[in-house]
Image (cartoon, rainbow, N blue to C red; front, side):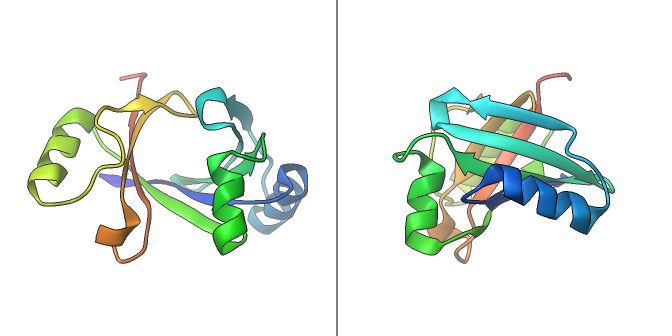
Length: 133
C-alpha cells in the first residue's frame, strides 16, 4: 500500500491547476469529469504520488457541499491497494465505517471506496485500485 494521491477541493479548477503547476513545476497531465459525483478532476504528478484537484460541476456536488462546510483544502488522502474488495473487508472487520458497500468507478481509471472520516481522526480516506492490473 502506498499514497496514490492527495485530493484537494477547489472553487475554481482552472485557477488551481495554474497554481499547482507553478508549485510542482510540472503540467497537469489529465483532466476528467466523474459524472456520478458531479466532480471535475485534474491530476499532476509529483514523484511517485499525484495531486488530484477537485472542482464541483454542479452546486449540489459533493465537492461544492464540502467547500461550503469546510472551505477549500485537502479533501482526502488516497492509498492504492492491490485488492480493494479484500481491503474493504479487512477494514470493515477492523471496525472502520465504509461510505460505500462496493467499490465504484473513480477518476484516473480507478475503483474507489471511502472510509468515513470520523473513524480516521477527521481524515477522509480513499482506497483505490487501478483497473489496469
